[in-house]
Image (cartoon, rainbow, N blue to C red; front, side):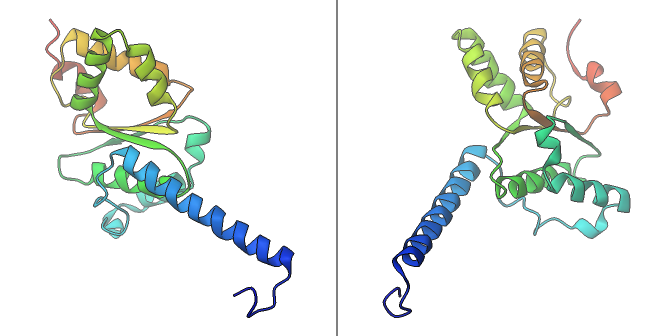
Length: 186
């Protein structure tokens, strides 16, 4: 191509570097998507955005720019089961990954189990550091699962560790006021 278009050495090297940078970016995004553990079928194209109220749709547009990540702000999505909370936050997370942001997805129950194992193996600080390397962690169905005191403690430890370090995106079928009632703490 360089010979055909009689490119100078500088232009040839520039084109080569640009292609290499784009290939590295593409591979980085693919790796971030893999590492995120997001359900990839829950993307923005598959989400019925027109059914959202105008105010929520505006908030989605605001979240898609990713500015909340720079400020380590959190996103909370409450609603009835099947209302699309998880799908919407997963779709936003995928869009942010395409902007080269690192996002980790986990259901609350699986995340708590991983935290308990790490605590038992005295690896909790290491796991907390690893999680906080992400720009955001998306925790699905928080407040819905019945949790023991130890489970709530490790979840609180994670959330406290993330405070001002990384954004947390949460979904819940229960309003915040009813979270305490869902646990089995005496």
